[in-house]
Length: 215
Image (tube, rainbow, N blue to C red; front, side):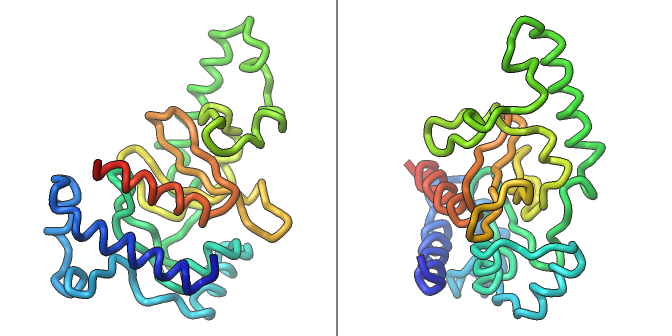
């Protein structure tokens, strides 16, 4: 999907959410928006400049993955995507997950994983310190959110606010041949992460989650 089709995709998502007058949660959100957002039918922002993206990359010491860079050029941040995520960060707001959520999210999660391992001493999978590749690299409907590698949270990039105990993350430990980072929808109530091959693959899946919420 080229950048023009991605822009149209986001425009469609934005319009559909703003027309979701039969869903009380979306109605409450729409009522909180400024009038110009409702008039324009655009939940996004002005696109980031190349300089803004580079400044974020220099600050973080990384090169952002291609599909996420394209998203930022279309919209430097975003509003609500589903019932679970209320805001995607701008280039100025993205930050390492550990910098903001080490004590309130990462440490409790890892402590919980250690406790689970101790309570399942006969379970060979849980005793494994590392989820094997043949289990980890399963995407799509057959993926089990529990089969995430918990240790990757320590180096993940936070690209959204925490919504309903959920957050969007990008994982620099898994990078495809074309530079895409693995993307996570992490939620304590899964428990675990829905993992995708790229930021854009995650957005397409989240759009389907949004459409399902309207039924």
